[in-house]
Image (cartoon, rainbow over all chains, first blue to last red; front, side, top):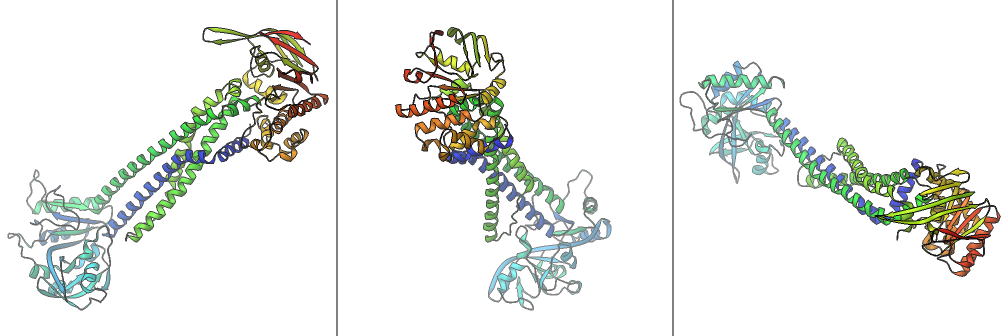
Length: 415
Length: 220
């Protein structure tokens, strides 16, 4: 029996039982669509998170006060009693060799008044370096300059959302606002930073010196000027690890922590966070794939079930085929081809459905304000369709063997 | 054409042994039209299955077209059925949802020659049904369905046509048409063996082998 005749016979059977074939395919179809869309969505989200992590700043390292495991988020609430000082930051800037830029940050919760609007927001005291370390770009005006810092100027740069809240469509440049009762002039507005790490979008930034002079009430007991965080840029991606060690060493020494003592600060690099996120997404992807894989398995059982029914129902047909010269091999091939074609068709339609799901999800998410890339993951498509065909063949094997073993005389008598 | 020598067939059902054939010896020559008759349970179906290479005898010798077939493998038997024997059944056994033409073509795909529309059409023409080629069995009358089955039996140019109660499901008028078709094929040189229990069918054949209780009762 020729290969083409095999296919023709299989296709003919499949098409002459449209409803049954459709139902048989359904399991595989849903399985493949599920695998593809789930994995694609997880990957898109991962890509998005990675992108926003990178937009936080290249080779960024954060130093925050508190012990390891205390659980402070990035850009979230920093520890209330800070152990970090401006002098720590200066020491890192002068002694750590793998570090290219150091930006100390103070942070206080403030009340901001502009015109009639009155909102509570975070005000960060920063230096010039902060713009470069954090990869900020201004939408209007300028960032805080060295001169502003030296003069302790009463100037402020607004986060994108904060500017919108306070001024609406009006340009805030040159406007005066009150922070905790003190007047500041708006000299710049930052570009929107993104969804995942958007704290800065709602913050105000003033020169560190101004913040210490007029906003902060805290003083470290004699050891220097208290700050809430240090943002540090390593010289290169490869230097991040050594930079972290150097920073730790310098701070332990300055804070008089013995070899057995626990750090009173935390050093986190964006790489650490990206790695953790990647691990989380890899696990997520695996779980999604496993769940979708189960539906492929169920699809396979569906194929086996219907093929078994089909063999019983078509006993006479099998008997006749054998009478006119079909060998066991021919019957086996016929049923296996049917199973393979069914699962291949199911897989193909599943890919199409998966693509539709991805597109629709991306569209819905975009409407909700999440620009989501619609990716059709090629490796997953290949894998899912391959697995679908294997499932089809495996589950078709037993029914096909049963069909091939039928006795022609018995089969022809079958009612 | 067909030489049977002391053919026996024993079926085992658990511990019970049932002898369906108890030593059958006979010859059917090339170009003959022979009927095998007998009441139900006489063993005529078993004999037909053995002659048609669907079954192997328990003992005895069977020469078909000069070949000893009782010892051949299942695959070899399938090849012989495909090339040299055309089957016609009481209940037609056409594939439903499949056109008459595709039904006639069926043996060709197992013969290795692949499907061959033209040959199938010729076979349908020879039974007078070329105009119904695109119809499905459910759209054909009983006599037409049996003609399609005969065309299918003829497609590989067999040495033997084996018909099991070919008119059993047809009315008298249609039966006559089918028998005349067999007669005509026989006159063209085809060897035909008919299994039946109707005496009017026997009238169309040159010779009858009567079977009772697994033995030949009479050769007429």
